[in-house]
Image (cartoon, rainbow, N blue to C red):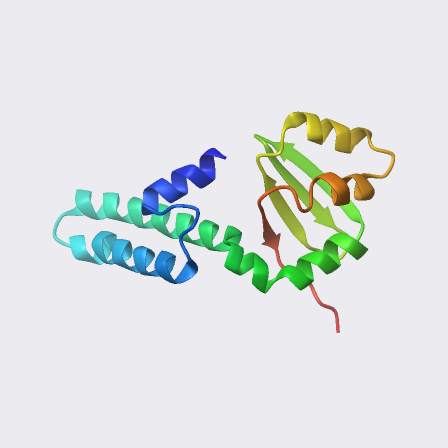
Amino acid sequence: MKKIVDYRKLLSVNKTTELKELKTVYRNLMKDWHPDKFIENNDEKLVAEEKSKEIIEAYHFLVSISPETQAQYINDYTSTTATSSITDFSYSGQILKITFLDGSCYEYFDVPKNIYVKLINADSQGRFARRHIYNSFIYRNVTKQTTTA
């Protein structure tokens, strides 16, 4: 997906980069582009502010889709996708966003339009998603589960 490729290019990392290395790259880039380094020149400070925002966004996104992060939360993901019903879904630019009854929301990347159309037309959208989406595409949790007391 273009977003993933662009973020990796911005941080000069590849898909095999581990979280520890990603964090080091992020910190070094933030040292170079921190707006406080450009106090004397307002134009450079504005450029640095924009660049640092892009770096922060890229870092957080790449952390959210990293295999290490996904491994850390695999039990929550498995529980949600196996037991919670789909309450809503949307599709835009090959990103499928699925919201579950438990409050979780996941984005799936590089989902072909024909898979989305099949999801819409499936007799059981949950069963179709379990078979063809949940473990087939890169995903990230975009809304944490809400717990009730």
